[in-house]
Amino acid sequence: MTSYQKLRAEREAIDTEKMRQYMKMYYQKHREEMLRDMKRYYLEHREQILRHQCARQRKRKEKIKQILANQCVVCKSPENLVFHHLDYSEANRAYFPSFKELKKGNLVLVCRRHHRAIHFVNQLRFQGYLPKILDLLNNKPRANG
Image 1 (cartoon, rainbow, N blue to C red):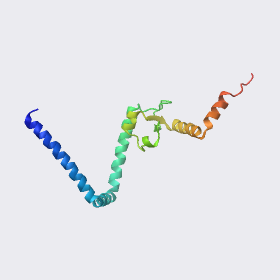
Image 2 (cartoon, rainbow, N blue to C red; image 1 turned 180 degrees about the horizontal axis):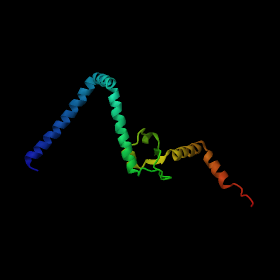
Image 3 (tube, one colour; image 1 turned 45 degrees about the horizontal axis):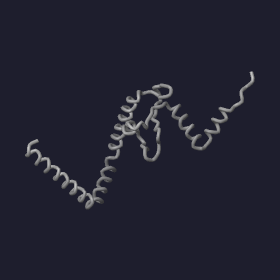
């Protein structure tokens, strides 16, 4: 890197920092006006914005389904697929599946039937019934035959 290039890079860094500070100050000074304009724009273009968001979310879902092999992890069925979040805590919650969740290993693809079963078992576990049911199943008397 030549001295001119170094000087130019330093100048750009300084300019970038000054611009960042100016933008922050401007936002603080004109915050209410900017929020009002954004709200007005959203209300005027709501249909277009929602249509664009839905299309983008649909594309993202399809890409994630392709990555997850487009089949239920339990029965390998390619029909009626839904996403299941393995960890649905407050920190990991996202209404729409994301690549970030996919990288964390928080998403699996299951059919609707198995998704209902997963949530039913989780509900039983949460209410404390699952251990009792499992005990009953494990200790059930054998039929004499």
